[in-house]
Image (tube, rainbow, N blue to C red; front, side, top):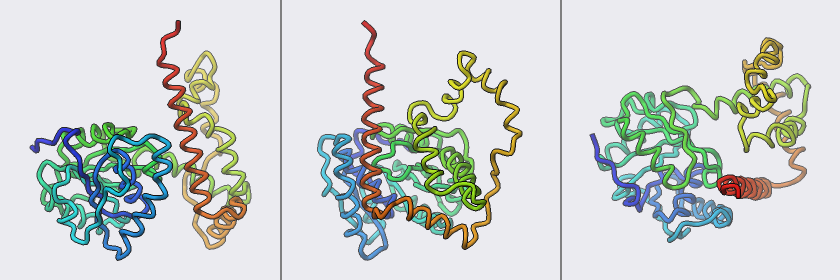
Length: 323
């Protein structure tokens, strides 16, 4: 069993794959004062990574940089072994292709020291199925982030059947140490927790568009101006607890439980026909009202920063004892 390093002694990390997710991770690691060694087979990987870091840096600055944070403290390598040499942690963020993940994780396990934990940014695969070709799968852990990783704090952590439990514990502690909000899952389930919840909402939304029951903009407004305002504070379960009034969740279940049998939801995915695809695409373009992707990203980031800062203020106020 490996003797994993103390968090404070990890000063350099590797980002393997630097697309939207991997590049977002790189920006976040840099903001925490870490050095990043990146690897990506794309010939223009360095230019794309630098552009992503530059775009993310204002948001990270607004949220607060760690001492020693330097957005230029990264290198991009063509050789995988060179990219992971001397690092204390690896974050893999390759495309969601199972065979690619299996091969890459096996190569990473072989190229890194026995005390280096390797986290995968997979959004759906379990580590058990991704680790089957690795000679040493004990240090392979899922560290599932949310886009953009430099802004959204949640990381879901779960090991595979062959993962050392101490490696999973170390990964959870590491993500927490660098400022992430961590869910350590007891066992693997397809899609993890948050994506399972997102998928249910996504499928229902597609059904409503497909049946002409709601437009794309109406669906988004239904969340942003409705339950979405409550979820950052208490999530769906505690929100329903409060919906039961003084009786709490018990009253909620007693009163509304029978409605679970009502045809309010259709969890089977609709067929993604050409018409449905085009309807969703057209709806998004209409809702954007001419705003470019970059403009929408800037507005999203500014909104997330404001929400996180407001939430931090509420948490700080709650922690102050009443006079």
